[in-house]
Amino acid sequence: MNCDKCGMEIPEESKICPTCNVNEGGAPPPTYLVWAILLTIFCCLPFGIPAIVYASQVNSKWAAGNFDGARESSRKAKFWFLLGLCIGLIINLTILILQFTVGLFAYNSAGSVG
Image 1 (cartoon, rainbow, N blue to C red):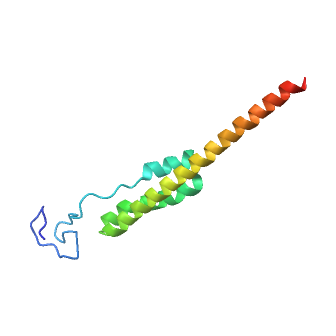
Image 2 (image 1 turned 180 degrees about the horizontal axis):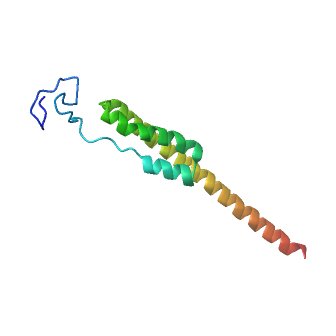
Image 3 (image 1 turned 135 degrees about the vertical axis):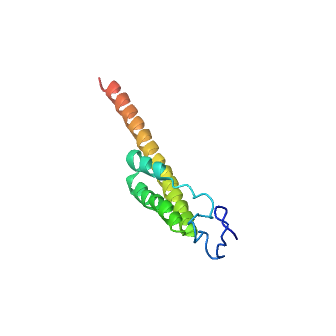
């Protein structure tokens, strides 16, 4: 395979041109870093931290030529984000339902005492 920029031949085991350092691996995978940070701040800290760790590895692995590692880190960041989002929503909805039902029960009990 030849480099699109300088025309030099790129070895088969490499995706980076040894002459001009152009990455021939295509576009990097999504990092999900913004989503991981928002998850950590607003929803579920224990699941947001691993999502941030994996998301922050994507670009550095891609720049180093570890394309499979970058894709794997992106996949893991997405997994932790979605897992944290689902569990956080379930927990928050459960708390909301419990607050509503306990408040409704307390309101009904207070009205029947007097």
